[in-house]
Length: 174
Image (cartoon, rainbow, N blue to C red; front, top):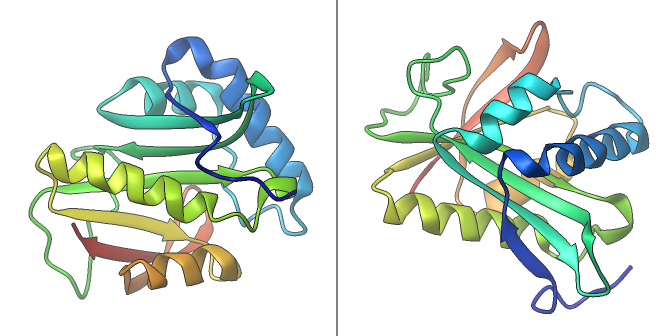
């Protein structure tokens, strides 16, 4: 479905939005051919992500401001097992933040929402003093990989994360 991304409603998410976040994640995972492409976060981890140190943005259509069609989450995971900057092989980072997730409903893909959300969150991270963004992407997720590389992310290494899932770790200087 073609949409003008400038007419969509972008809203910072908080703990009150957890049901919408979980519903969006479930719809997206159900739509995937390979369930390993997107890590299924449990409610507790997702709640910590949207209410912790960082920023989470939900995208809604003007005709239904309660229906989330996309979201992006960026978290400061320093000192946790989620910190993607630990174990980097090719990059040295100073003040990292994780681009944890960008999810777009299948019918809204192809509108540039993933990139648009990444630009918004990276701008926020720069303003907060973060110097690098780290992201993990499943090697088969070519669309996300291509978008990340086009936006300046560089491959660092491949790792087994999140209980056995293979992920490519990429880094960007903000």
